[in-house]
Length: 187
Image (cartoon, rainbow, N blue to C red; front, side, top):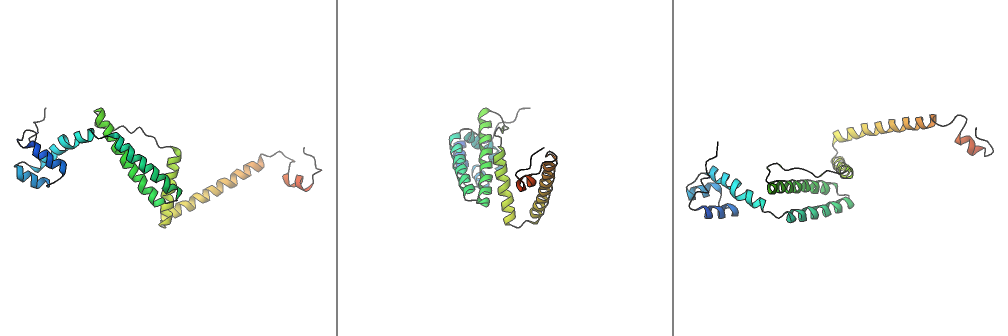
């Protein structure tokens, strides 16, 4: 079933309405009263016929430039070991990447963005470190308990690995005996 035409697109003062919508003022309720249309019609028109085309025309280079600035700031935060700043920058980067994906999807004529950027292992580890360090700084009991369990598991793994290495040495060979008596021959 086809949708009815947009009442704002058919309005005689559409050009003036579009200018107001692009400027962001006056508020939709005031604008609706001024032009004798409903606020919901203005909202629909704004999203479908003003904002969406503007986003489609957005220069992706501008988005890439902002992402590049944030990546540089992220590197600086890493060097300064500023975990809180790193978390904020990472969140901002995520939003810019999402915007870029939406713009690319709109430019391609699809409604759903395709997230093709994969996070490398080193990026994931850096993000995990930053989050854990920030939580440690805030004395988060849950994180402290989890880290204590993790350390215990690590120690248990380290001990069992060392025992396995000792058991795998050839019988009759002892590094301690060799150091104590250099004339001792190996079997």
